Length: 475
Ligand code: 5AD
Ligand code: SF4
Image (cartoon, rainbow, N blue to C red; front, side):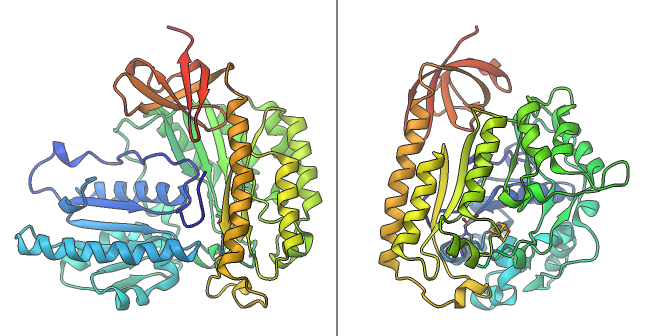
């Protein structure tokens, strides 16, 4: 389970190299290193940026020291996430100076993502090593901006919300490479919900849904490249309402049904959802669409209705429990995951207990819990009753102890069962592969490389804190 202060990566999987690796290319090729913080949306954006640069002749490198261009794709959700960027920039400054001393050429440094969007020119002021600050809506302009830096400009800041849609201007997904069996696909960006603690509506802007035809095209291409599982991404993914081929808005459920029709695509997931947008057709999809995996990340944030109202969540604790009940009727083995904030301004002990009550009532397979972190510009940051660190820490500890117990009992409950595992990559030990259960848990098994990209019945034999061990059932 992720603790407060960690960047949030619900799937915790390495990003596939989007363009050829530097090891196999000419000496004078330009190399880009992209470091991703935060959510899956950033993982997806990093891939798209690498691909856009790939079209300009760049190759990706995992070694920051070898990179001519370093991009930090940043997260602004909590203060610690943003501070990490500045400490990383300190390290990068030293690398840039060393590379210059050793005559290895210019190193261009770019900050992308939500810190870029939120802090803009402040980044260049605080960290003059930065040549370019670029917001998430401008990634299609990246190659042009890099050329301007090569022509001698410095300290460029591109954080407008441009008129044009970046997806129409980014090159198509790189066609020829072989991908990992799992991929992300952004279907929706931005959020109109304005929870009072959250920066996303300001950093990512208003909700925009991509047209269905673009999603189908991209999904089909990914499947041709070997992808078997697609996770549909959006800050408020179930608020999706993109234009369908019939010219009318389609719901996320309809998109899921359409994508499930693609031969060779075996699994679909979506993240992150708001309880208010869990429509009947989406709940139905969990009952009827076999390719939709029985795992749902559904944040509830807090248990007490007074706090939920102050958060502007527009649902009560009882609403959330009723929704969970309906989802479980639709899909009895649905594994639930959630996000919870402790220590929101004014939260009393009794109100915190109400959060624990919801957790006990639902029983989560996985959860992400955070201490409330005041974000400048959000309504909650100036509310009365800001709580002290020790109070927040104590509550977080109690909550996480309960969540750890639930996560481990969910995992232990699978021991002895045979579940289909999609094997994604080699494990740390030789002869070992790592895949995912339908419930998104990593599963390790002794397995031949031939099983990579295959969904294989696997008997779960033991459960550790963060992963399961399994034995493949068909040879
Ligand atoms: N403080 C603490 N946690 C936050 N989150 C969002 N904003 C804040 C904040 N200001 C958490 C929420 C959200 C998740 C992505 O991060 O739980 O669902
Ligand atoms: Fe932020 Fe999610 Fe609330 Fe939107 S729904 S404002 S992204 S917490």
